[in-house]
Image 1: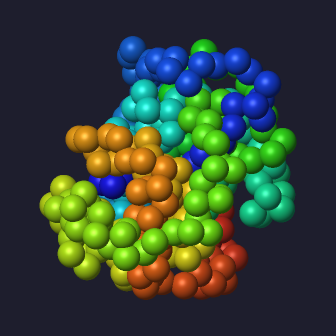
Image 2 (image 1 turned 180 degrees about the horizontal axis):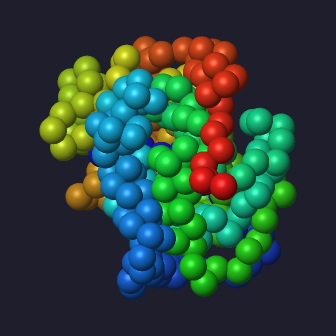
Length: 271
């Protein structure tokens, strides 16, 4: 469980026949000129969100975007990739009960997964991160999502089976498995370590983040953890997810994560 995430979807939402084992890969070269510079800046922000000068003021914990999206979203692992994501936007977001842009989706993560403050729309950091993810979607046909703000490249999963298991989740077994498979990277008290982010406590994601939902966390764990030894069973993933989320983490009150109205957005050009 080295990394955390927020994104998952059924391919059936799009009625597109991608096989689960299809390989995906990022573009082979960065764009030239100023656009390429901005793409590289966006990638840097993904990897160093909590320490970069442009974003650290908006982050309230020890997570980065790469904590959720392996390899800054360049991974071929479809359960955490950014590849193809931009093609799904604008999209309807049931949580926000509105159609949102890719930029808005990114900024909302700062409030929830990062337990911080929403950066201004149109700010340099916001545009750079949006540009980076859009670059990773080159060649993908636009297919705006009317159901959830997620892309065709996210791994499908039989959620009904997991839902049934959640009713019989064993947090004691989850605690035991955490000690065997997760503690080395994430710490005895979930506080994180040199090679893994915190998974509960004040420096982890808050109660408004997607991973605070046991079903979403269990789904992601199955395909991503342990990072060097994949192969958690559905039952083990459910037990570990339930144990992790049984521990304390910050609450989420929307108004506490929104900036003053005059800082919600900026006019970002010179003319």
